[in-house]
Each structure stands twice: as structure tokens, then as C-alpha cells.
Amino acid sequence: MSLEKIEAIKLSATNDKMPQIGFGTWKIPKEVCKEVVFQAIKAGYRLFDCAPSYENEVEVGQGIKKAIDQGIVTRSELFITTKLFSTHHRKEHVKLGIERSLRDLGLEYLDLYLIHSPVALKHVSFEERYPPTLYYDLVEQKIIVDQVPLHETWAAMEQLVHSGLTRNIGISNINASLLMDLLSYAKIKPSVLQIELHPYLTRKKLVSFAKSKGIAITAYSSFGDTSYHSMGMVDKSSGFVPLLENKTILDIANNYSVTAAQVLLRWAVQQNIAVIPKSTNAERISLNMQVYNFVLSNEEMKSIDDLNKDVRFVDPDFYIECCPFYAN
Image (cartoon, rainbow, N blue to C red; front, side):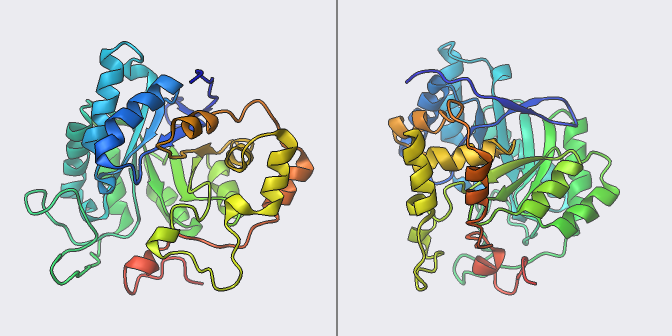
């Protein structure tokens, strides 16, 4: 695999450079995760997006260590992101959350630590269950929402920066009104907003607002519905066309002799939005980085924008009863 040069986004809080193209680790099986991460580093990926709920942080860390031990990369060349899970939102639990991730990843600090979701859930200790799940009670499969205000969690996140455990902090899966609230009291404003974003959910106003406040955007699920069919989270009843099979995307891909996935990633990075595609296939790992050798025209960008249907595949209301976070 050829080593591709990836452009970067400068973060306003620290001037750190976050690569535009990172490597997502959600749904990478433990048994292959170490080698996949190692191969991704060899291919040129430097940003890795992790989370305790992905249940593979130990293996991600092993892949990172292997690459560092072999002299392929240094720690300072990497940009490692992970997230605070919803069961650790109370101020006394926030530091415990990052310390556990650092231990599992084998790192002394993070480049970016995100609040994974603004929805706080009742705390479950590491001794009782880890990696975390949404359930407070596994037997009854009971989910309990905890009444933790975001300002409490954010103040504890800021302390992580002061203590050197993370260089940057940010937020994920948040809407504009709650982001406005956070900015009203944040002493350290979020460096990054990570959200579901793809041509079926373009979120132009939220992206524009965040950028106007100096907050960088990371898009997840850049390929739309791909990862969600097996989870029963895609409504196919009304003639739904998978994003990777959309004619507009395929026609543009054919025009440049690239894949549909590359078009989707190019559409995002051309808006200065970071992406974190995931794959365990060596060819696709390499191809997903190759989005700088073609430029979409204004007309092509607009034709992709016009695919917006405001269709989201990640909604707390799907898996947390009585939590209609995005309800109008």
C-alpha cells in the first residue's frame, strides 16, 4: 500500500493539526483489530477514532504499540481520539473514564477526548461491568437515564485538559441548541464536534454554526446506511436506495474513475470536514485515503448536497426509550 499524504485541520484551542482522514474502529472485531490498526498506520493513517463501547481499545492500543515499536511512527505523529461513555457523565466519574481508556490504549495522553453522547445514563462501575453498555441491568435490559446537566460533565472535561490527560476536548451527537448552551459557559470551548453526516443528512446549518465558532467538524457514517442494515436501523419500506448505490454518486465516481466511497469522502473533505471511514479490507483501507487526486466541481458538490433527505441512522430514541433527542 502506498503512503498517502493526508491534509489536516488546525484546531482553534491548541493549533494541533487533526488529519482530515482518520480511521474508525467501530465494529472492528477484536481478533483482527491489532493487525488492522497496524496495517492502517503502515498505509499512512494517523488519526484513530476509538470508544470504550466499541470493545476493542486494548487491541487498538496493541496495534499502535506494534507500529511504534517497529519505528513506523512516533506517538507525536499520531492523533488519537476516544470518548467518554454515557455512564460516566458525573463529575466524579469523568476522570475515571479517560484513565481507563488510556490504560487500555497504552497511552499517556489523548489528542482529543469527546463526550460520546449528551444523554447521561446511570453509572455502572468498572468492577461490575466493562466495557460499558447502555444497560444498567443486563438481566432486565433496563436503561436508566441519569439527570446530569451537561455543564457538570463539561467542567470535568476541562479539568482533563488542565491535568494533561488530553490536549483537546469535544462533543459528539449534539444538536445546535445544546451546543449554544455549552458555549455559554465553556471556559475551554470544544475543539471538535463529531456528528453523523453524509449526503442523506447534510446538516448544513449545524456545520455552519459550529465552524463560525471555531469548532472543527468530524463526520461519522460517511457511507450513510452501510453499517446499519444488520442492526435493523434502516427503513427499506419506501424504496430506500443505499447511499453507495445512489445514481448521482455512481455517475460522479465513474466520471473520475474512483469508487462511490471515495466520492462520498471527497465531498466531506472538500468542505474541510474530517472523516473516519472504517474497513478491514486492505484495498479499501488504501482507497479511502486517496481523495486528493480529484476535485468535485461546484455543480457536482451541489448535486450531492441535493440528495439530503434529513435521514439519520443514529438516534437515541431508537435504543433509549423516551429519549427523543432530535424530536421537533
